[in-house]
Image (tube, rainbow, N blue to C red):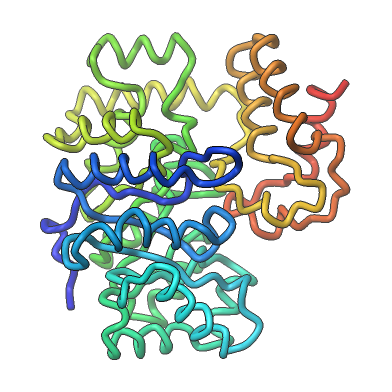
Length: 373
């Protein structure tokens, strides 16, 4: 079954950064966000076994599956290599996902975070590609693919070995297009040459591209005064041929409304706007930043309960705005409910799961010098 790119919603709802209240997902607010999104004509929901400490799939059940006819939406979820220790775990996790979501089948199913080394080796070791195709034959999966955080070289190898793959989900945004670690542009070109449909994740780079320095924001506002800064990042990704859905990890109703405004009557970037994005990118990349996308994979297993993405967010804010009061006030409030940067015991758990391959231990040392002194 081939994917009809024209039939797919351009805006996908990522259930990864959902609003919380008292430490739990705020289901009432999520339902309101889902309703606004569906009412606008969009219907692609992306979750995963590990999102929100394993609660995201259950939220999908309560906010979407129970409240809308099954044929009215697309649901995607993922199999995590790092949660498997035997081939039996494939069905164990999959059956748990079916129960959590109550969905009966998944429209899109992905091997989660395929990359060089551990994760890819695990998927091959347990024959997960053949297993996925068997689930498709059983009608439990409509489309089978993987999300990708590896090198362009490995991507070529995987696609040569597994021509059965129907789509690939990659991290892509204008800041990472030439990033020597992420290499978004190279990944995109490989998939385009092979005519493989793409889903885009991290189009706003974990929120980094939603708020820029006043100088850079003024450049965008001079051209589109009523458009949000985030909309430029979404339009960059959505203007690329071969992309069928752009995922946004929406955290509140305001983000939902802004994204709907961007995608409801979508306008691709014109040549002048593309040139402006290139100019903004060049200036922005001259400011050293920690390339954290706030996926929070590092948080669940941290023995010191450090909110690592928030620590990095504080450091980036200090660097971008050269102003200490607000970021340090934020950090002081943060460490009242989580560990300080200096509490890191250098166990390396965080580095083993980071999709961005950040040297988190070293970065935490530098953060501690800035914030805990």
